[in-house]
Image (tube, rainbow, N blue to C red; front, side, top):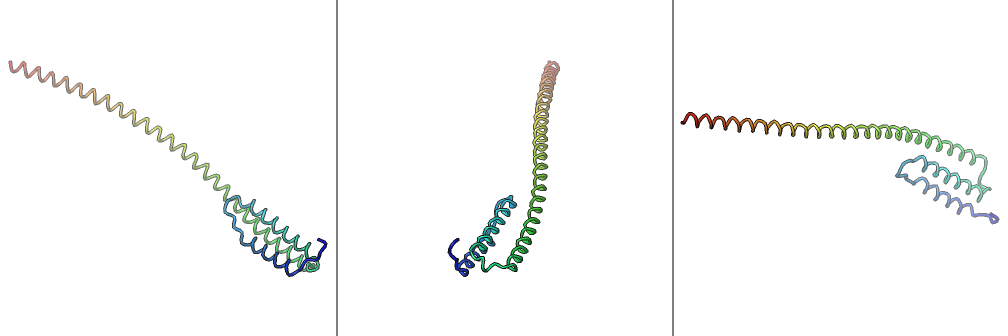
Length: 149
């Protein structure tokens, strides 16, 4: 930049941008991608500030910014580790759920097959018993007719 920027205007813009970055919310995982992009945006913003008003940036400010960035990076790395652990646990639980769903489906299928087999067996047995009852009834009727004669 060839023209000197107004430090108060640049500072105001940077503070607004920092406020915007600080208020961002990340709704969908993986958050690590969002964190990396957020850190790049923050780093770019601070670099732009330093380029626009180099007369304001001294060694103390650079040290404070470096310490703050380091703390932010540490915090985000901890969150990324936590997210990865939760993601791994979620993956394990989803795999377990999928195995349980398959097992449940197999059990339901086996139950359905056994129920059908039992129903068929019941119908065969019921038919056989009805046939026997009908035969016995015919014999009884025959015996009653003989006795009546």
